[in-house]
Amino acid sequence: MRWGISFFRLWGLVVKEFTQFKRDHSTFAMVISVPIIQLILFGLAINTNPRHLPTALINFDQGPFSRTLIQQLNATQYFNFDHFPQTEAAAQKLFDRHQVLFTLNIPPDFSRKLVRGQKPVALLEVDGTDPVSVGSAVAAVNGLMPTLFQYDLVGPLSRLKPSAGPAEIRIHVKYNPSAITQYNIVPGLLGTVLTMTFVIVASMALTRERERGTLEGLLSTPILPIEVIIGKATPFIVVGYVQVIIVLAIAHLFFKVPMNGSFILLILVTFPFILANLFTGIMISTFAKTQLEASQFGIFFFLPSMLLSGFAFPFKGMPMWAQGLGNILPLTHFINIIRGIMLKGIGFRDVWVDLIPLLLFMIVILFIALKRYRQTLD
Image 1 (tube, rainbow, N blue to C red):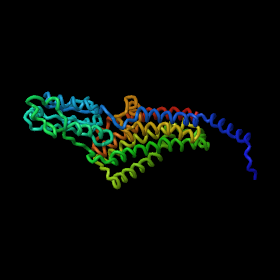
Image 2: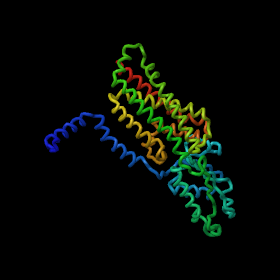
Image 3: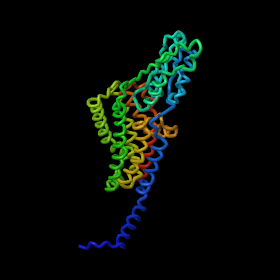
Image 4: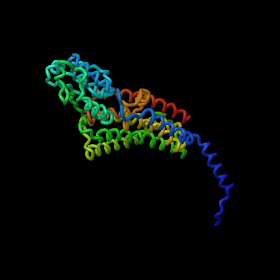
């Protein structure tokens, strides 16, 4: 056995590997682009301290002190009063449809009670389904209470400055008052599991057929492209629902995540989400020539889905361009749906807000997959 290392032989091997690596365009693009994507998403899009969060305002008082209260909350930069429902029922609808994270309810006698020294109470309702998104805002309100109206209560009103503050903002955290992290993570985890299964695994499985040459067998049959897609999709759909049952059972039995809504509704709305990801996997398989390329393309889709959907980081804390990209992805809407059903107990009338974008994505991807698959068969 010779142990002497030849520099020329070693250099030849290194040059050979670099040449092969350069010719593998998909791997080369993956190595270059993934760090750039991660840098952009983590550096620009991810924000664990979101501000200017959507807030509904019900101001029955319309007095000077209620306006001051709103201004002081605005000054914290955590609240953006952009919805003005006329009733509490209308405000609840905004919660159900994930359009606001807070509702400030100021009673009609707020200013009068404050002048009389009766310490009025304003109610701040908080959407607790995502504790990370609202945690800093709640802490800011708690820190604001002792200094409420300190510049307004002057002269004869200076007697209304007790140590605990002249008024109170009572915080009511809805859906997850104990801020249990599992209530937020586990429902969203179901969406990420299904996305990974159908986008990455399904695309690799379908690409494997092309590598083995079994795809050519379809050329000698009168099978239509839509029939091919349905036939290949059915086993994956069954596997997907098995995953749904397993994840929901573990979530309820081990993590005590409640099911406040309809289980049947959850099963029904999961179907278009499964199809959207499955059609994405089929579309990827029509572009990929090898299983390695299929997995790489799948990661390109899965990585932004996980980071921009609100699963791991607060969605409302992202800049508008990142929220725009996130709203295109099916995982964003499915997470809103499943958290809404399990934690808020919403029904179909509130689900459709996120269901329509999900269906549109599914239809567009199906059209592209059919067109690409027909070209592949040709």
